[in-house]
Image 1 (cartoon, rainbow, N blue to C red):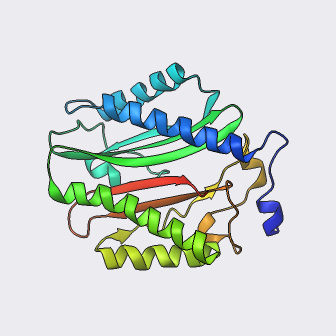
Image 2 (tube, rainbow, N blue to C red; image 1 turned 45 degrees about the vertical axis):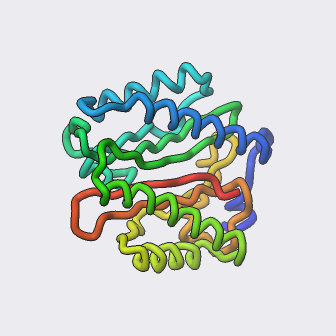
Length: 219
């Protein structure tokens, strides 16, 4: 499939629609994160997410809402959580949402910390910082997907974190993007265009059993 075909969109697509979906997804993340408290089960947090979606008027979810607590922050999207952990007073968690708003796919994720563990706080902050560095590199240098993730790996290492290269971003569009079967952003052999790709960053602490996640639309 050519790069042009991998960036195909449907009749409903608009950049404004994608930006709206991005805003609404971040609104959902903010509301869910504010309601997650120590003592809550991971499964309860996922249920809470569905309640927030309904309150905000989603069309539907296009991928299951993920909330990962503690050591489960090292799990990739396709891996199941270990058990149903309780969020601790000094703990780390991330939220990963894929929601359709007005026929457009939002996909955003971020990491949060309870308590004051300085390494957990640094890890959560580093995931967002690394995302921003990689996004800016894409914007300034117009690199293709493989070079983008090589840069991400180099930067993560320089920052003292381990980048998980099992996740390398993906397409979004007007729903459903899956009909284009475009593959991972990290394997896309052209410079990704604005408003079509999700940049995913997942890092791990080099010695302790937790990590952090951040993703958003490349615009």
